[in-house]
Structures are given as structure tokens and as C-alpha cells.
Image 1 (cartoon, rainbow, N blue to C red):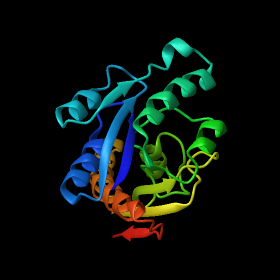
Image 2: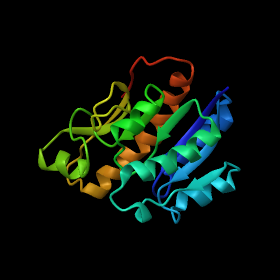
Image 3: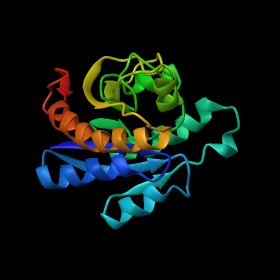
Image 4: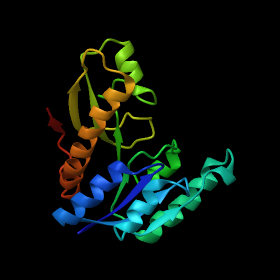
Length: 196
């Protein structure tokens, strides 16, 4: 059974979707939830589900990203995961860190990549007058939000949508898409999963 570490920065809603699906499906085991914010609400939620938690606060490291990532990797490596899932992890990782876990790190992004990498995805979709939005699961590579696509789910952009209403609809699809992609990825299947 594959061992999965999940990296978060906030409330951990995608982490919860992944953990619950792993427990129910028994195709993988959540061995660690780690955050760059010791106050992240998701840590408490993970602990309540019996998952080992850790925090590596990025702030004391200042601009020294490599030192922060060395401390982060120490926590990750202690859990010996086969797969790393970024689930709302809000730190840009250096190429060295990505190389260390190349081929076994996934991320979920709230846009239909390659559209709108980075931040403010919903505002950018609305400003562009897009008729649909969605989310993407991709392999993590050194180029931000540009790794091979492994899954995508779409939602319509509705008249009167705001960033918040669109974000809420996309998040519902994230919770649906990410566990399904992880199930396949854990068996070695990297064929893109496209949900309507």
C-alpha cells in the first residue's frame, strides 16, 4: 500500500477529501500531514483523523528557502512517503526540492491549466469572460503549475458569478477530482482523468 504525505498551508479541505478517500478505499495510507504554518487549521483536523502531523514554520527562515526546505524534507523523509500531495500548500518550491521528489509529487490548482497559473485564478477567469472554469491536478515540476496534467474537472461560469461563488463551485470539484486522481496515480496510472 502506497504511503502518502500531504502538504498544506490552511484549512485542509482537500487534505480531508484525500485522507477520507484513502481510509475508505484502502489503496494508500496517509502517513503525514505537514504545514508551513503551525496554526493551520488542517493540522488539527488531520490529527483528529489519526494522521501524524508536523509543522515547519517558514517565517524564521526568512528568504532562505533552501534552509526551510531542508527542514521540511527532514519531516517528509522521516515518514518515508511514496507520494507527496500538495493540497493548498502556499510556498513555491525550489528546483532542488522538486528534483528530490521528482515523479512522485502532485498538486491541485484551481484553474484549467495551462490557463491562469499562479494566484487569483477565479478573478482572472471572470475578467477574461470565460464560459467555464475548473481545477487541474498535475505532476509538480520546476516550472510553476506547468507539470504534466493528470486530471481536470470543469464547471460553468454562471451569470452573476463572483470570485467567491465560482471558487466554491470549483472547490467542490477539487474534492471530487483529487482523490480519484490519487487512486489512479497510486497504481501507476498517469493517464489524464477528465471529469465533466
